[in-house]
Image (cartoon, rainbow, N blue to C red; front, side, top):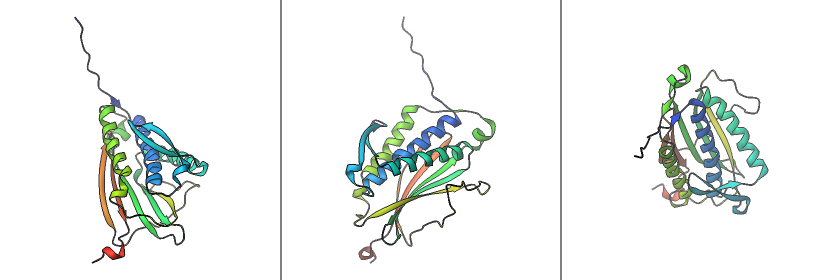
Length: 207
């Protein structure tokens, strides 16, 4: 008689760190594509999280995100990363137009004691899919960016973290009186990531 064995997915700190840092790389690429920061033709199509996604083929962007993910992984595994913000600014004036905010809560017991958690990989993927779909549909709820833009990434870490030599101290690049849209979150049971985008309020909407 056939028997079925139920298996649970064990999530370790290192495994959760890999999921979150990889997610941010794909999310950043998706934001840069969907917000038109780089030309459409500079992206290549891939499949990830069961979805067609786009990755920048620009060597500068690829190197930036690869180096970023390496540093994020170090901070995530140490439980020192509180938030990552991808900022989109006007190329001409450096005015901040959008802030894509990824807040991170870390299970301190996992970091301190090395214990693991349990959660289905499929469930995590479904939660990430929902965020990626919201980024892909951002044109429906965010104002059009009708000028050339650039981007930067801010990392908020615990106060005792030394600033790496490839990073610099920065102001928070805030937007005065922004509009905000809360997106879905995902949770590996070790890292919980909440997503929020804030954007500059168009003057003609300020009635």
